[in-house]
Length: 151
Image 1 (spheres, rainbow, N blue to C red):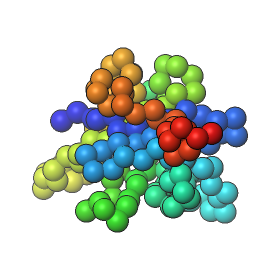
Image 2: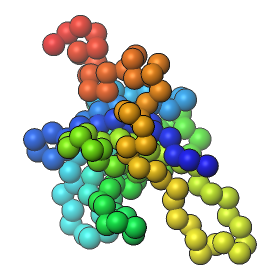
Image 3: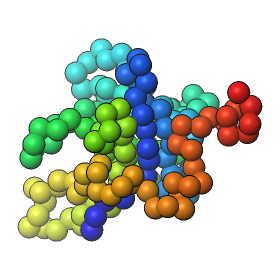
Image 4: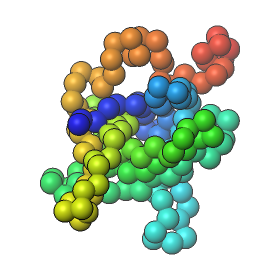
């Protein structure tokens, strides 16, 4: 089973990320990855927050075992979701543009308990990572003010 692109983000001057996420039940614009002020090494590098400031999740920096590429690994949760959603965020070939991917965890098998690796794909799997109808309808960087015609 492959991975699915569920979000697009861009980096801001302060190192935070802003963009949108879309699943079958969730569509959020103006979502931010805010740099976390860590007091312990185990704490996440980023907090995931909604446009209104609601805490949605967290993300940790990881390095790919294959080629050392740095990416974010985390989760988001919301009351309307049955379970938290695990994700990875990869920088695309276009510097400063990022894509959020999700893949269903592989089923656990008795002889495969030690191999719990994710099946996340590359950020550059296709042209922009989104099916045309989603990409055409969503401005991933819009906020409520800009999407309602207010500035």
